[in-house]
Length: 132
Ligand SMILES: [Zn+2]
Image 1 (cartoon, rainbow, N blue to C red):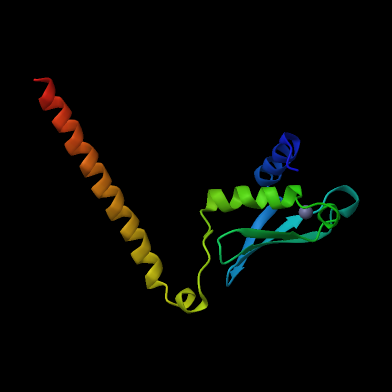
Image 2: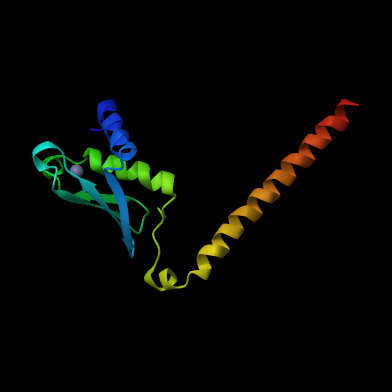
């Protein structure tokens, strides 16, 4: 269970740069977390593995995560994923290589956003003229 206290601690890890993004391997983002106190020289590997249904499976090799489904490192990395805008959608291996697909997808989203705004703009115009 994720508690408010865990989120606060996770945010603190991010703020103090005690978790950092390392690299992406296929559909897995790898992060490194630093230990505290007695384990301060230890590094944890945190892994976010994107599943085909775009759900993310989290792994962490800290002590806490061995007995729980979540740990503060996973939460901290989720915050990092959001702030760094890391990919959170599953990609087939073939399209992984073709980076051009990525750019097209972004353009497509922007186009749709533009069309949406245009439609909203037209509707606003219509409402205005109805008032006259
Ligand atoms: Zn952990």
